[in-house]
Length: 232
Image 1: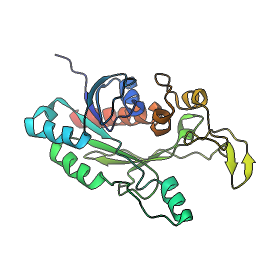
Image 2: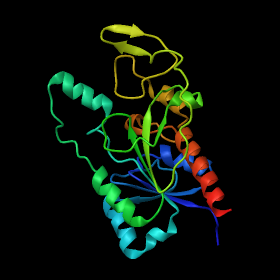
Image 3: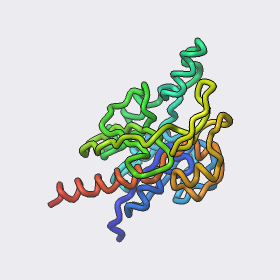
Image 4: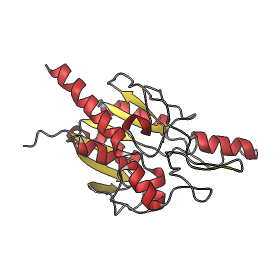
């Protein structure tokens, strides 16, 4: 029987988070609402909350040692909130799934990670990561709520310059690319792939939603270290 720990990757998209856990030595099963043929690991297509509830009901959740979830972030993303405010828009149709998700995660009894862009999403800021911490070509600040485990916050190094692109009619060059949207000096697909360390998908939408695998490789390593300390 394998002793490798297994991660359930909910709202998996194309597998940016999953690849980091894999690189740290964990097995990963993904789940996403839409077809993700580029996802590099075992995959279940379906509603992530329904899938999690089913696993809890059947007891199959016991196959896992950690749950990672990256629910849709538009309702609380700093970019979306800022754009809506500047245009006089409300929240629109963006759905906030985190409260229901957290209830289910608590019911699993497992350690978990909820990932969101740094903004107004209702998650605890237990951990914040940035591309500069890993020498990447994107900043891509992300907040992580850690359930049933914790790890110290790493130092956040000073940014080396601005993100390349147009801002308020002014073009700025810099060491980071804008891995979201189109136009205005935003990164090309090859630039996003190189900047985030994601090579298995060339779908722009998947790249703009992904987190760099370096983030979850760091998280997985911290989780494994703490788990080992508890077992000793």
